[in-house]
Image (cartoon, rainbow, N blue to C red):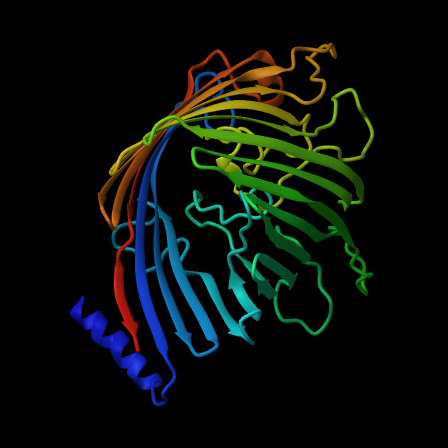
Length: 425
């Protein structure tokens, strides 16, 4: 540890040949997580054996500030224990550049940031860090920011390519080709309001044989727009949101929406209760048109919504019948402990058909989520959880597997996040 401090101090002193104020800090995260998956994301098929594994994130964050410049460098390695032999010379995933950006503050109101960065707003329904996933989520983008009193405006653009080329080539990465958005936040008394307009362009995939010379590569643009409001009192807090989607996706027209409400009440200093409801539009299985009517939360932290077993919208359930999620929340917190119990009741937002083409129940099932966390040290937290899904025949029609089987998921995670160096001049 002393050697590491000497290295960082040497770097700082090397840069500090002038009188500008400087700040440098570094922190390390090591986060192993055990999971038992017995029907996670979908009912487990009959006769299959549950999965068990330990995944881990190791991340190093370096933050530097001098005068009007702010920079951040974040490197990480994500692995599954045992994915390489003990005497390996290489790693499966290697080192990933999670964040690498520079920000210049023109004055107290205006700034710009460019590079690989986390984009996260409001309750993370549309833009989120996706921190539950070991790899998390970040974007290559250029952002301009305006802040004044109670107002905050971000405008950003991104444009992606496979590699450096001399001629246009198809974009083959599972990602957007281009993105533009504007996010505005303001305060009105106890109410915080945000407004978002997002334009994402996905390049249409060419099917072999690909002609030469290459034709113009068409990009379809989908717009996601809406608002998020939240308010907080002495013993309560609540939020609501509405987002719509339009435009095109894979040449198909899009017309979808998402609306949700959430309210929490602090019964005592330690005990909190809450309830909420979310409706995500979908398309009836009787509808044979190519139009997309199913809302998709784009870059949201979807694990935080619609149950922790991730049956909906976490890399799945796209272009489906939509979802209605009614839920309760019970939380208990002390200085070192946190407990939460979250039951969800799921219904489809549109018609589900059985194998004979007949309408079936819209009730998909009930999920019970329980989590607990214990703060061992200011740098160490142990957390864990257990979830169980009680699915119906309608759930099995949509997701497959066997709902009569016990479908559950359990996890245990240790998060160690120490500050290893800090320097301020």
